[in-house]
Amino acid sequence: MIVRRAQFTWAWPGVAAALIAGLVLIVFMPPSAAAQTKLQAPVPDKPFAEHRLVIQLSDREPVKQALALSVPYNLLKFYDPDKISIVVVAFGAGIDLLRADSPNRARVDSLVSQGVEFDACMNTVDTIERETGKKVALNPKAIKVQVGVARILELAEKGYTLVRP
Image (tube, rainbow, N blue to C red; front, side, top):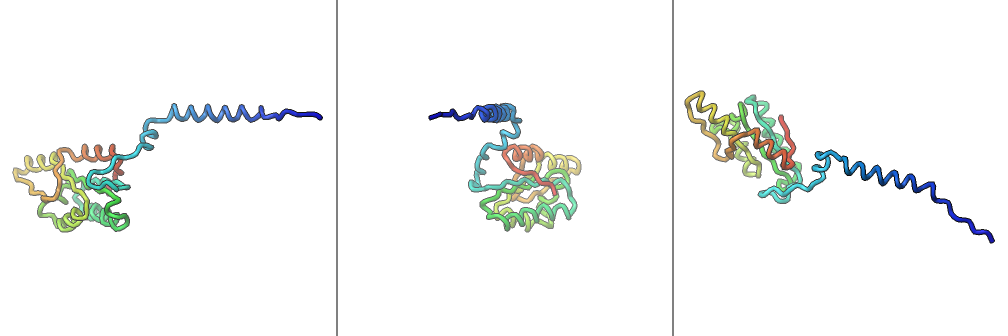
């Protein structure tokens, strides 16, 4: 009786090469790719939010303001309102949307009642007041933030997707 030994040596170099390639990818993975795999912390007022969106509004054009209001409205219809966190940050000319006398105030108030946050840049408000000598009356439902762009950056770092209509 003749016994032959199986010849599997040809497969080992391929397996070893695959293992080494995998280790190289892990070691040299860019930090941004590694960060994308981290779990996001829950949003305090929306612990079940699976989606996060920050909308930048820096234009006073009525069409842009209408878009900044229709995007949250449509997303609230598409997703369960508890499954999405939406923040609209207004600065520069976009601050007009959050003025107390804005023609869109009822729409802003309606979205706030559905959980959308509207942030007003106080740097912009301070500049307007300094240049005009008049106090800017804001919608009382707007949240005052010192620097609008910094607020956008902060939210982006927390996993929010930035949209600019």
